[in-house]
Length: 463
Image (cartoon, rainbow, N blue to C red):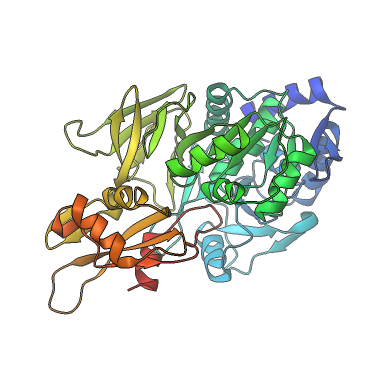
């Protein structure tokens, strides 16, 4: 057992205070587990992993299941490193992650452990002095999966920054539909339950109508969501009242300003933008929700320092200093992007008042005959066009004989939208090289389970 684990210390305090209090609810509003039952479940799972060596990696692939806190607590006590896997991950990606991280088994529903078929059987990794408690898979652009190493101290720091900055307390009821296996869900749902005693509704139904109805039924007060949920809620007929909901959070992808305004008008609640990264947890948070600027993400979170690398540029990468930043990547050890409590995201930021706005990503810049085009500039013009509700610009391979890339875009909006009208609007507001060659009017712009849009996938689909 790892001595003096700070998360286990916090859990012991919560257990002493709230032993018989409700901890986890289902979407019908019924109590599923009290805190003492989570502790009982942790003891049961400890017996299942008693034969694993300290430092071994155990993958957990159970979706948003009520067993998550018990499994994590048991692994902390046995010094077993947890590797969350999303249920929707492809078999090929899952197997690659398991192999690269030397996982000895995979926890499936109801706490069953399926042994991995790695040959030869993996020996525990020599973690040195900083043995991790958790490995988070990144959603990076490389084909091979990569994980980030986190000790309990860093996980706890992220939880404290999130709860203190957002004003989340144990009098709230968190609604958990975002995946616990993803960094956003792990830090905003599971950690506050264990370290702060914030009770939780566990939901596995991501259908927007079901989510909205369940929010009303359970009387949840905090909803960490993604832009796709808020957009769907705005377009829904016969939406229920949400009198108990007090805090709406959006992360995972930029929240379009038009969606935030429409949601506030319809439900009387602001949506607070939350900007973070798997490598370092929360970075910025828009607590006031008063700036009507596209891409605004607010001020740095409590305990987080943000320094622009090139303050004179229109958009710059930043150094993020935080006690929640991971120890580095795995199996890669050294990285200029993540080390010594500092992480450098690929996002391009610009000052906005006393906070920051996201103006693009290094990898999103489109190379048009040697000129770098920021797709957000194009999207801003398209979103101001009548009838457009969503817009994504991207680079795709230019025809043979032309250099680099050409610009295309997808928009969602009214039925009478016409490509020619949108192209003309771009010509009026943008330089010639910034005007899209094609604008595709579509019913839906696809996102992954985390609510993120991949410009790379759009380029493949509309190339």
